[in-house]
Image 1: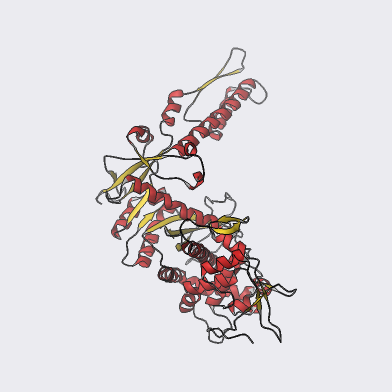
Image 2: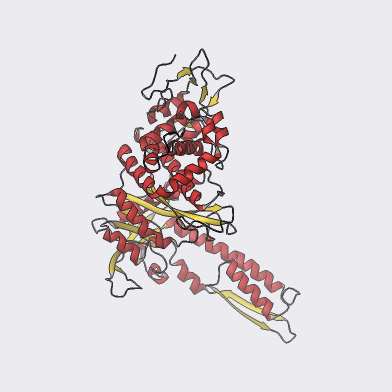
Length: 546
């Protein structure tokens, strides 16, 4: 018999080779360990307790769903079948039959009224357990497309609506979600679901309040996109004695102001974008910053008596952005020229027999090719009744736009002890939350969702977000336990690489468990060198289930 672990569950033994009846093990022990450290089951069972006679608590069911999401991402159905082929009973202590669709649906119903409390409590537990620095938080929103009508959504939960989905499926209803990720490792500490048609700018104040509850007495810098900047949002940040940083929209910075910036007066910033890593010096993008000498003022358009808020405005120039803008404009002009030349050749044809048809086509070209700001034209009719067209691109308008290439502005209430260069470097951490949305719809494979009601949709988003939290904690832990600048040998295509959540889970996926028999204990196939190194970095021993 195998020795008993401290949890009362038997320890597992190593096996040198798999057998025919083995089960998938993969990263299950790692995910279960990090779920335990983050207190996911414990927090959920405190918020949504079940009857003492229940075979499975809500916390256990959610942990099983997190494991399912990270090991076998697919629509959340037939989880019971997944549990039979994976080592779920041995690692999680959950019988496969307990994870039927009805049980998981009832679990989503049970946790739905407590999502805010669950999110906050798990975040606090993770911050404490893993020592996460929350001095810098990054906020952004995304959308989840839905299948189904949802004609009578429950009022207490986000309502599916049509909107502007990130996956470009305007034919589907959507639910939106916001995520706040720590600059330390890009750990998503807070999430919340919103109505599908909710304006992003209106959600920041509520998120700010929730983040402050999580942070307690600690202050933080909140970084977001341009929708973060409104009078109410900035006032809410200041009220909580925190700071913010976001790019200025066209409302807060005019093209003429960008064109007036002098690159010769700007300060170069020592920053290399990740996309430029490994490039030769001449190919690396350069960044410059220039602070506006006059404080930027933001006023409350609704309550005129409210005090004006003064902010710093930092102008930023990126050579990569300038090159991209110039290339994009050249492509637009070239394509528009081709379209206009074809139109000119077709004047008087059955497609363009009169001025009205020609004018309609020019308007379409200007709209589709986005050249309206600099396209000038005259449409007429010659004595024979044939339509005429003369056109040209306004070079002055092109030059005026080109003067703004590469420039944008950042707004912040950070004190002047933070230099303009440091402001830019802090903003560059915003890619952390954007990268996590990539993880959400990549390794976690969040496809269009179909569930019974919007109550369960909101709860499922929380489950998925908890899975993302665990995914990111695994990545951060492996990297923190590596010496600075070092890589794991053989991790990517047998080459050294920095561990990512995706690479870690993929590398561990081949681990197998041989179930116990009447005469032998359960066994785990012995990990190879790379797998053993990852398990060491993560501090997980698969033979000792949590």
